[in-house]
Image 1 (cartoon, rainbow, N blue to C red):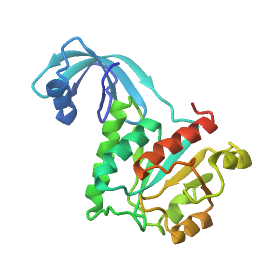
Image 2 (spheres, rainbow, N blue to C red):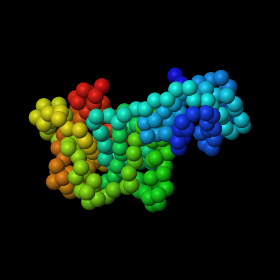
Image 3 (cartoon, one colour):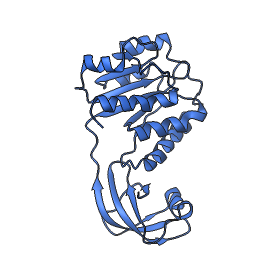
Image 4 (cartoon, helix red, strand yellow):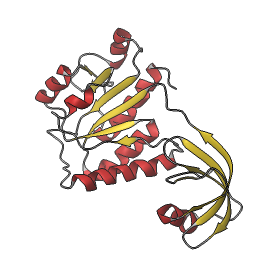
Length: 242
């Protein structure tokens, strides 16, 4: 499998130089050799296959041999993810990215232990984890990470969604019964993953007022960091995306 590197722009032809962090990773960490083939992408769906023609100490030069473009999926999946504990952030974002999420909305839920003291720093860390996970998963479209939202700020963000699924262990309705009832006609779907301490009663009420459907994701209780990828698998299977 060819390694993927994400750069700002893909040139139309000729030689492109991969430097900076990506170049260092290619030349020093992976030790890509002259003659090897790699993939490059702008993270927005455009990609190219290229042959390495020169390797420096912290950069590589490549000649593009093939171009391609990945169209956005018919369905858009957004995860409203409560802030996980700091030691679970990377794992959470890796699983969501590998699972096929299109957008992640970080949520400062009432029972979230973690806090973003510096919102810019917190957002940049999440974006970096998602970008790195996209390379591992060979995704040419890097999932979007929005700014941190409070529960009240979710109101404006949730107005665009056709379907909002709130996964909660106390729900009476199963995921499969909800899909049987509502059907699979939706294109812009959001799903809510609460913190380890759970979604508060006030937050449940607020999410339901926004149109959220309270459902259970099976009998076993997932960690917050693992629930998102399980939800993605269930949704993509039900909507025949897989």
